[in-house]
Image (tube, rainbow, N blue to C red; front, top):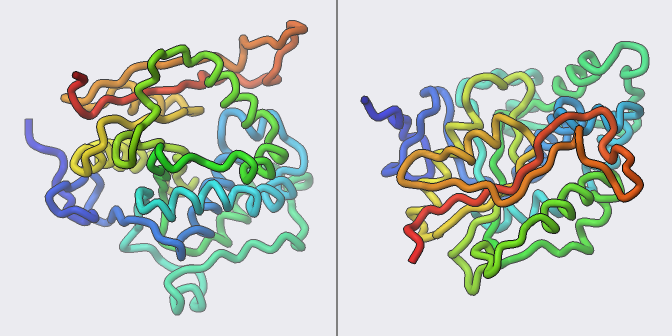
Amino acid sequence: MANPNTNTRTPNASNPSSLPPRYEICQLDSSHIPWANAILSHSQLFHSTIWPILYPKDITANLHRGFPAAEYLVAHQINSGLSYGVFDTEYEFKRPESRATGGALYWDASEPGILETSGLEAESARLLEQMDFPLVSIALSYDAFDALDMSKMMPLIECLPHFGLMYQLLAMGDTRDPNPSVPTARGQVLYRNATSTRRDYEGQGLMAGMARWLMREADAKGFRAIQIETIASAVEHVWREPPKPYKGSMVTEFNTETWRDEERKKGFGETSQQVCKIYVELKAQE
């Protein structure tokens, strides 16, 4: 079988990707934090299988509250130097001022939304129109040795209470002893957190192509494993079944449709999504 990895528009020419030629994988830097945050916030709050069902009202207001709340999570990962994005090298700017600066985000929290009158798709499209930049898909990650400061995560958890519950349930189900995802130094385990593609670029294999590229890149950097929590079936599939010689294993999982709290009440409303923690071994285990 021919090698599908022929696109050398990557940070490492010796590690090409399988993406179509018009796309380029780049390491994200601090200038990309607002763009990456916008892609993450927009795709999750409007188009995930969980958040727009759990929080169907005032999605735009929640977006504008959640955007600054998510900045710490996004910045921590981008500033690690281990986060990457797919850029469209043939992107057509919507506004001349965006072209002049290489891209811009025009969200304005004071603008009235149209969700209640025109529906979710129309409001999503209105906000997407204001995301005038060539970054189209993100894969954020950080070295597990440099853990998140959970106190700085609280504003995001307050905006999305079920976000904290998901991670709590996954942590409770993780009974590994010893836990191979806990590093003793930098450069051992990569934590993936935040996978999103812009609505207008979905269905082109960008997430899968960048994920598999990142596995090889992390391997080349010396990492022995990658751990990721997934709340989308397509993402779960890619990481659960990585290309050989890598080995993916399910650490713990639960379904939002069947999970019940201590009072036997449905904790995730009418959602139906498998939530998973997956561990991918990049190096042979001794």
